[in-house]
Image 1 (tube, rainbow, N blue to C red):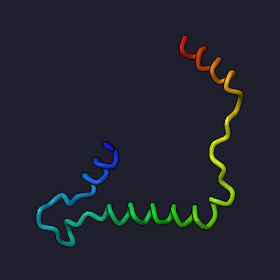
Image 2: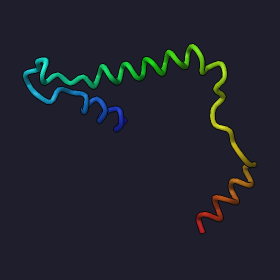
Image 3: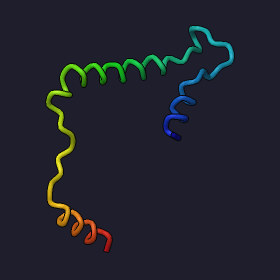
Length: 70
């Protein structure tokens, strides 16, 4: 919730009178990046991306975490 709030807050205009010199173009950049990533995922990545691969059994991972906590 905080990340969403602060991202929206940082995209607000920094001046009360907005003109071409004081306009904040951040919302356009954010929409462009999210749009590009969404289109790329819909067209290509959803066919081959399976998510992160887990290396090791749950017992091995628990033992490593226990060893690191000591």
